[in-house]
Image 1 (tube, one colour):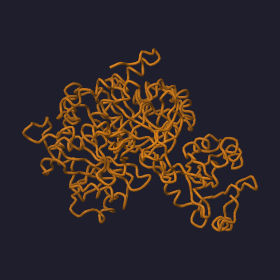
Image 2 (tube, one colour):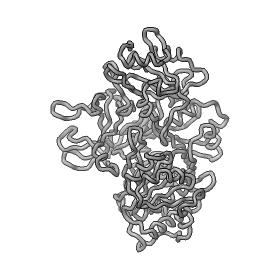
Image 3 (cartoon, rainbow, N blue to C red):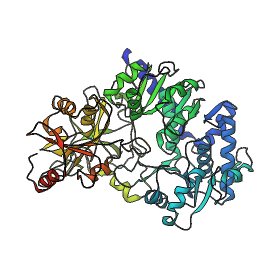
Image 4 (cartoon, helix red, strand yellow):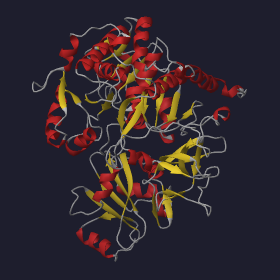
Length: 598
């Protein structure tokens, strides 16, 4: 293998080589899954801390023992290969012990979003057809409220105090043997077997359950261990939900592979973050870009530069936040990456280029076939040429990112494991893309690639909208709006206006004390073209997020701009009056009738 020798690339090159070295042996032993690996880690690191919660923790030895107890509990219940168990619990050390134990004996653990209630919770459970649901005592009320919509064959177990209706799995498992399972006790799953269901965020529809194999868990854990160079001295601060791939697999798995400790928190708190980080002596922080923006927008904290961080790793750190986050908080290194739970490829910004989501080194391009193809925002589909093939984008041209799954000869080239629902899986695959017979995974993300090979996120498919014949990126408009003084937070989306083509821009905006509507308009006028400036402004107290800190824009777009349905302040950009005016019933009627000039 030939690798570049540019001196400026030495540090990034080392990260790629470490990741390749750690992942290369994975497929040599098809039965060495992550639950089995935990036993080996316990032999190596013994009583060193593995998972550290506020009130409890597990050493490597106790994590191994606890997972073995849960494995034997599962066997006692008759659980075996392919049986599904749903897990509804907040972040805590036992969370990981449970899914390790159940997946070790061939079960599939469905990691439920703890924010879901009612129809969405019932839907998430029903689509994976579980035998059991395990619920934390404090979340039992939400589960009971949805129970009438859940299949009657499902059995329920509680974990921890707070609910007396169902048997306690933690008490039941505590009596089981803690030593490693003998080969005669169970049929071990292989790397190809499904281990977990991890759900999509549901920002563009009902959540989908993505298939996650044992191979994928091993690959993620070891690849990121190489990229971050995790070691026994590391302590990872993980306040992201354990039901998601970033907080539950990447942050935990990569740290444990290196022998470090994972400091778990139930949720992110900007007010407590720096003090907590310092007290826990954390060297790593797994971020989502929104968390970094919250910290940058926060007041000075005496602990914000007293930390021991050597690296922050995550995704979604926007270019307009990057430099201030790095310099103000004295972050030595940022590892930004792009990946999706079900995705067939990932990108890594090992060079620390602000705003870039990553690149693929030339010496690995044959192993990670990725392309950007021209996209039609009216049809939400890639553009096809007269021969029926997709059209590749040029440098800095925006298109949808796709990853090859099989080439024209039918040979696998990427890994797409799909969803529990086969129809949903098929919708994510493009066929006959560049040649008859090939298949590519659709990311649903619009990106551009510069001449140096770095990729930049532009928007989600469906978030970009067309107005006055031009494509408008909600991400780019949001970045301009949040840079205005007095804007604490914002969500940009398109709304339909009768008698017009496309969708007009609208922003839901959270103001701070020094917000001024006229100043916002002046700010936008000098930085955005006319078609990209939001026509409607909605003043809101807060913007609702998913459990993984993604904006719930779909609900906002559906509510539109009708003052009869919305209690928040609404404004319309009246171009004739050169200012935002209150959007009252009379103005709304003119907009609906098409008599108001836009």
